[in-house]
Image (cartoon, rainbow, N blue to C red; front, side, top):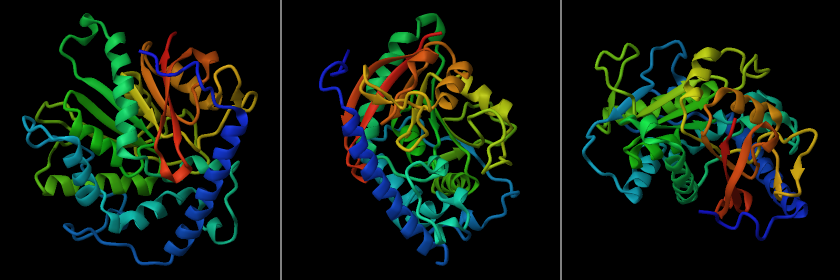
Length: 337
């Protein structure tokens, strides 16, 4: 089940050209976002208050099941539901604004360079079809790593690391009924947008809410948590709603990780692995996820691989469409402790 992992290996120059394209995309993001900071926030069509305007101490439902579990939602329909109802185009500016929360007001005076550490917190929207290609490929490897005893009727768990406004988590939850999907986002505003969209889906009878006490006893099919995947204090988001122990516990149960890691920090000692033909993620990502996640977890990363030095074995790679950065490479890795 290998897809061109040893052929047509990208060169370092190829990745540098992609980095230039990424820098242009980030510059456009800054220009757009700087303008948007002074614009009034859009209201939701079907709710009276935008989640960005809600007090962050206000109780918000952050987990739900599908209202009609027996209904099969095909992928084109799910894309329409996410694009038009849950994360509509008229809120794109709000999503982009939220994605530069870490920069504060710096965007008015400075250009974001490709090596700015705050790039990891910026917001981008990965194409649904490319997500399907990568997750379908990875899910095949998940099925190979889970034994019948381990499965035991349990639902599989997928985590979107850096889930933003919840767009991909919603889509995965709607189209993969045998998975429980969790989005973990460190940004306060992006997380608030996600739970606001979840509330809208509940209002439209797309989802059935689950309260914090889970009095119904049902497992959440879609959940959102505001927390830091990396242990320790984050310099830009020091106060998240979830403590580190909660986030680490969620990660430890994952069967599949997805990370749109195109702008994540690369390894300081070896940013490019010539043998694998790929940029290498920083040890803060590779080592932390390896120490937290269970053996056999399968991870999808984009344009950067998890470092094999920390137990991640590269299984597969696939070129996929991603117009915002002139195409991406998806990497499928498995953790072997």
